[in-house]
Structures are given as structure tokens and as C-alpha cells.
Image (tube, rainbow, N blue to C red; front, side, top):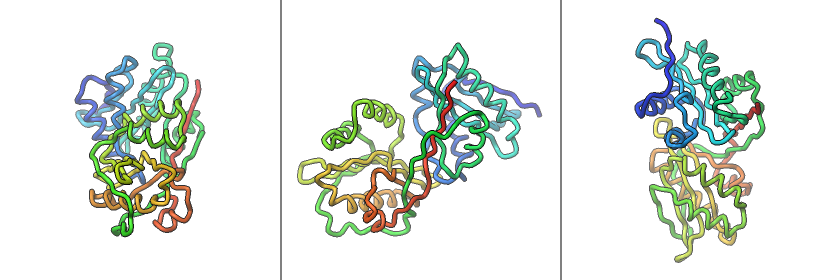
Amino acid sequence: MSITYKYFEGEKDLDVQYDFWRKTTSTLPFAWKPTMSPIIFKEQKEFDPRSRCFAYEGDDLIGYMSFTGKGDFVSLGYPWVLSGYEGIQDELFERVYGFAVSNEYGGRILAQRFREQWENQILYFEGKGFEITNESKLIGRYLSNVESTEGIEVSWKISNEFIFEDWHSIMEENDEVNEVQIKMLKEYYSSVDFDFSISFFNEEQMIGVMGVTLREDTKYSEVLSFGILQEFKSHKGKMICVLMNEARSRGAETITFHASDIPEEDIQKELGLSELTKDVMMVKEV
């Protein structure tokens, strides 16, 4: 049966894309929960149907590739295909990448991230001229038991949404981020489909905010936003215990944190946290 290629035609294609991503990444270690970037990008002036290409054999979807972009920056997706159809990856890549870097679209800086264990994906992008520009450690553990919060001296509130302004106020008071970083993170967090957040309080004062995602099919959880007021860092370990208990109660079996959020070796040891993977950023300039 011949293979046909189609570009984005309507809302149903987004559902198809999300379902295919979950299917093709379900066996990859530490594959993150899908973001809302495709939905947000579709409403932007930079969107073009040719930014999403789907490959079909008959009525069966066997592969797709896409990108999101703003200005000359493009977040280039990987050509995901079903096992046995690796031979169409280059065709998908040329269709999507070729349009992204065309004079019509104007992409000049292209980037994507993978986990360090995703060797095939990394090697494929290296073969297309991408270079690893940054690697960020993710530490975590498997959530096989309930953590003790005995002796914790702060209260907390759990929400099914993440309020950026609350996290921003913590980081601003700590003087840990500049305006450029805040702008970038606000845009990034707006694309994250948070499952819950935890706000910590000392009496009426908010002293910490953490935002978490949970991928239901693989039971993998990530702590993507993390902020604690400097003067209350002594409660950090217990706060993390509260967070891990909540993630576990929602079905998470594995959890990761950015290593930069928990640099203290004593806390890592106490909570049984160790390096599980790395975020690998790959970039190509044209």
C-alpha cells in the first residue's frame, strides 16, 4: 500500500498528533507529558499548516513531524514513526525542516531537546547537523513508599493549576532570576499542562511554590517549577516529601527534579534522590 503525506487540516489533527506522540514515546525512559505548544502555536500568526506533516499508509497513521516557531527561532520536532517505518523519516524531515528554513518561513535557529537515553533520536539529529549545546541533570527516584512529613512546621495548599505570579513573587524576592529569564519562563510555563501545584505557607506568608506534571500512561512525574524563599530553605526536605507524597497519591511511580533546584547533597541523600537522566539540548543554525 502506498504512503501518502498530508499537512495540517483541522483540529482533529492535533488530537491525532497527541495520541501518536503518546504511543511512540510510551516506551522511552523519562518521556515528558505532552505540552500545549501545538495548541498555542496554532493560534499564532506564525502558524502555517505546513508546520505539521502526517504520513499515512491507507487510513493508518504511521508517522508525523512538526515544529513550532516564533521569529527566526524554531522548535523542531523529531520525525516520529511506527516501528518498521524508519525509512520514511527522511521524507518527513525534509518536508518539515525544509519549510521551516525556507525563505518563506524564515527559521534560522532550530532546537530540540531529548533525554540522554534517547540515543537514536540524538544520533539522527547529529546526522542532520545539530550539535549538543547543553546538558542539564535531572535527579529523582522511584516512589515506592510514602515519605514522612513528621515535624514539618509549615502548612500547604494543593491546587490543580499553576499560578505563575505566585512562583514569580518567590523568585523575585530571592533575586534568583532576571527579567529576560522571567519572560522566557512565563512563555514556557504557559505551554506546560500542569497537573497540580503546591503552595507552602508560614502562617499567612507564602514561602514556596512547586508545579508538577504527571504522564498518566507511564506514571512519570516531573517537577518543572520550584521556588522556596531563602530564609525557609531549612524546611526544603520536608516540603519535597509533601510533594512526592502528593505525586504518589495521584499515581506517579517515578519523579524527577532539575538538579539545580536541589543542589544540597545532604537533602539528596536523605530523600534518596540520584541522577536519573539529563535534558540534552540540540541546536542548529542555518
